[in-house]
Image (cartoon, rainbow, N blue to C red; front, side):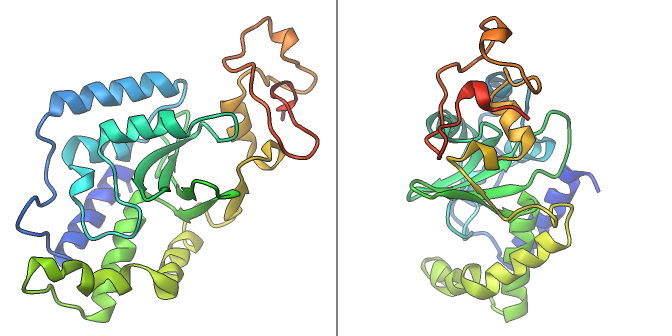
Length: 251
């Protein structure tokens, strides 16, 4: 199924099971031109990678920050997501992971691809963590897991808007919720991947992440000096044991 269509169906189910609040319900962005400009800016900043097609569709058709309740962290609007990516990207963080949610030091990040691949897996990270954690096989699966958890519990929407979080909070977190999310992963194309990837040890990163973050690494035996200054980030280093440097980040 097309990733954008999969996401559309998952959101539709989520909104059926967890009806939106009357005030500020999820809906299309008020300034579509601004959204298009931000998407263009992000794609330019992350080239040769680009935002997954379903994430672009999501930003064009919905206000991500209006979806509530959802598990921590809260989805971010496109402008905030761009600022978050600029903030979190650094010498010890994979550039192929772009934030789509942030709250209280915690992130959800989508994995970028070179082509219109999809759906893009979603990783979890918080400042100070040693590793990023593969959490959902797609953004659609986040909405599906929420809908599944609430529907299975037979919970009805509260009569008062202020009781929404109290009604759903226990269902959208904890061991049972994590088991549902793991089932989604196990049934997806991401099933065989490591669930955790150390952030600071570049040698543990998947090859595609190293190539994306260190474009000078064109193959065995190629050093920074041999690329004639074409590296985008020649000052990158890793504090992992052995002090793997920019020049060493090869396949």
